[in-house]
Structures are given as C-alpha cells and as structure tokens.
Length: 258
Ligand code: SF4
Image 1 (cartoon, rainbow, N blue to C red):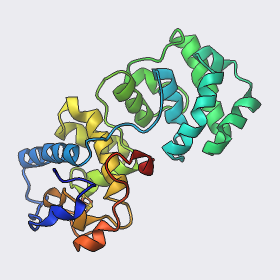
Image 2 (image 1 turned 135 degrees about the vertical axis):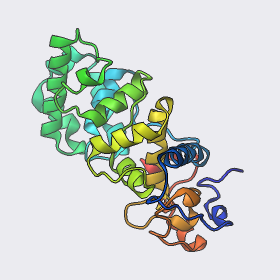
Image 3 (image 1 turned 120 degrees about the vertical axis):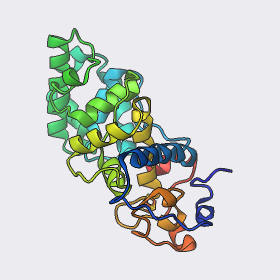
C-alpha cells in the first residue's frame, strides 16, 4: 500500500533528507515541486473538491458561500438554494430577505446574499445568463476573486487553475516553493513550478494534505509522507506515534475533512 492517511506512521522509516532551499537551483526546485505533487497524489488519491454542485453556476454560488465557512455547512445549505434559484436570472430577481434566510447558516449572509444577487444580475446583463469561462471575466463578478474564479475554472470547465486558499498558501511556504504571503504571488510562484495540466489537482491535493497532515498549528510531520521533500520537517512532532495522533480523516473519509 502506498503511503497515505491509512498508514501514516510507516512513512518515516528513512530519515528525511535535508532540503536546503537557500542553495537549491531553480531546476531542482521545479523537480521537487513536481515530485511533491505526484507524491501528494499517492497520499490523497481521493483528493477532490468537497463542494457539491451540478453545473458552473451552482459551483460559483457554492464557492462564494464557502468564504469563512466549512464546505460541510455549505453543502447542507445549497440543496435548498439550488432548488429555489435555478438560473442567473432567478438569483438576480431573488427576494433578499428570503435569500438571506437561506444563506444565514453560512455566516456573513447579508454580504453573501449581496454577492449572489449581484452575480445573478451581472451574468444576466453581461454574459447572457452563462458563467464565463475566462479568469478575467469571472473576476469582474461581484464577490469573485481569483481564488473563486480558479475553483470554477478548474472544476466546472476543466481549465487548469491554482486555488490559493489558506491551506495551499501555508503548504507552499512550508514546502519552500514560495516566500510570498500574497495569494496572487503564491499562485504565480506555483504556476512557474507545477505543470499547467496539474494546477487544479495540485491545489486539491495540497488542500487535503493541509486538512489531514499539515495543520496550521501542529503539523503531523512524523507521520508525513512528504517529509523527505519538505524543508519544514520538524515544525510539528517528528515522533511517529505522537504525530499519528494528529492526523485527521482517513482515505475515503472525506466527510471528516469538510
Ligand atoms: S511541515 Fe511537516 S506535515 Fe507539513 S508537509 Fe512538511 S513534513 Fe509534512
């Protein structure tokens, strides 16, 4: 069985090789980045977007609702929203109070209702009611930044996009693939290292790894299959048994991560 969340403690039989990002050549960094993406695929073969949707409009709305909210909570709310509003025009014409009531469990519901109504209006007025397929067009929609736009491009339109959320930004820095904190710059650094065709899946895998192993406070370094490729090994406990207790979710147990 390859390394993964089902057998995390096995992964450190060999001590991690030191990664010195200060002396690493650009070519070596590119190769390491691509090895990281491949290995993350072995560790998290079930990595995929956690939001439920059937079309680009639903994904766009769900992604807007996921700001400051768990995907699990969004998935609880969206069935009623998607049943009530089926088109951009429906959102544009939504009764604000009714929509706010539906969105309330996701937090920041007034701002989110504003965005969703505004998106419906913008799609109706400027894009024939369809979700545009270009980043520069998506980011003209109210409440839609590069992160949301890349989620939609990558998962609804099969257009590679790097989604820099809190997990991707943190892991990119811990992996030494960027020194930036600004998401746009992190995205540019990752785009220069990772093959374009892998941009979407690399983001999904990094998000899963961030949720399962590489937590913001106490990463499970001693249980992490990426340790040999990670200059931040040691940030969390390195003792396998202690680290294994920090691992969240197991393969197939995607619900635990949402
Ligand atoms: S910081 Fe630790 S848990 Fe995170 S990727 Fe590096 S070795 Fe793994």
